[in-house]
Length: 110
Image 1 (cartoon, one colour):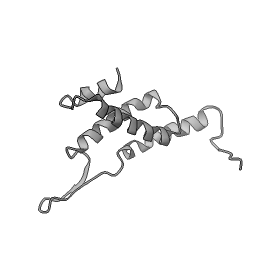
Image 2: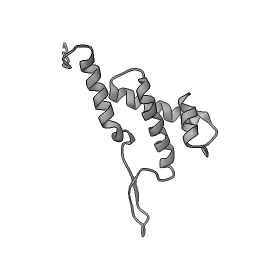
Image 3: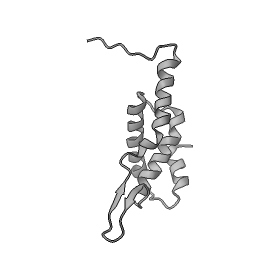
Image 4: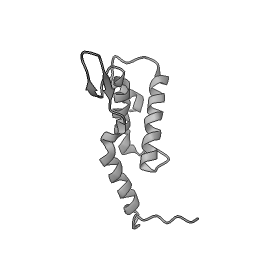
């Protein structure tokens, strides 16, 4: 199942334009790849991408509010949607660094 299909399954009332979701998917994929240190989104992180895209979409409808006032209508959102997945990202990076028999240390030549 494609990522867009998985997103549409979670947001049945969503807009019809696939370009909208493709942009969200690309944005989250790019951010995940940067944090994971990969050029391509690993298969296990496709579910993270779907979750994050759904949150981005629903943020328009106030999902992700970290605080809200009533009298003066003050709303604030969680700043980074991917913060929730920091443990999974760190674990993946550790596995990649240590999985190939390496020490996890990086040597940079100037």
